[in-house]
Length: 372
Image (cartoon, rainbow, N blue to C red):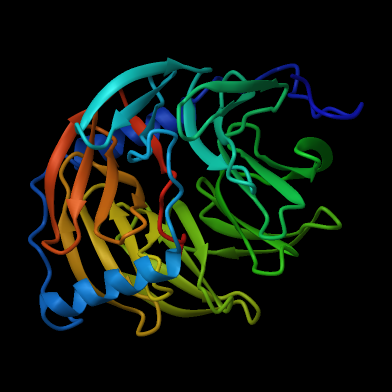
């Protein structure tokens, strides 16, 4: 299925060698991540019961979980970026039940605003695949989306953003009646990686991995507002629930850079672990998980106190994460181990790993806790 309308973004005729940047960085991080996992940090939120209460609060705010047609748990989807396929995981049997072929280098995925589809972005083959999030059935294929490395919808559902890492740009599409209409193309060197919208959908923030910066884009005008320097190789980025601060993972360092995005001033640098990469909120509006790909840990950060309150050893290069709606489990892709890990959040430890494909990256639970 082609893009709606007559406009189309085009890739340059002379293409940058596919995934060269990503693979060079991945090799360095993979070698470092073979070191033993760091020890569990002492929890600062009190006894284990206090953490369990926080998880329960997140579950309460999540609302009822969507039910699958069989009234069973919806599956977990894992993107195997080096194998060009998606693993569908049976969460009751804790096993991979099939691998679904997609395009080249699927790295990230995102649900549609109505929750009826799961979009898998295939960066090298320049296409999106829409799947039923309950069954894994392919709904449609959308070609002609240049280098969709990272993707996301604005909170008001009107905009769809693509971070085109190898093309050094961000593409904005209008989201209209379920279709994508090309709207803005913003040159943004070097290596735009992760993105997050402000609460009012007016601004999209982007990390630039090869220039060690973050950028802010005016969505309606499609114009760059500003750039700020940050730590080496910034990757994951989120806006805190109060919409005041940016949290940026400095993957080439060992900390999360906290920035007041309106004053453009540094608020804090929270040391978490080497290879601070990506984020996932518990869903309680306060606690944030940080995957430290080199140290093989996941840090638990209090977004109000701006401090680390605990850590969980996760060997194999922890990367992307998702949280079950009840707040009891954290599912994690281990980038270098070809596995997905299941973390019991009450015990704060990995209780199961499941083999998947090569270089597992993004993952998705349909019955999930709120993102923050």
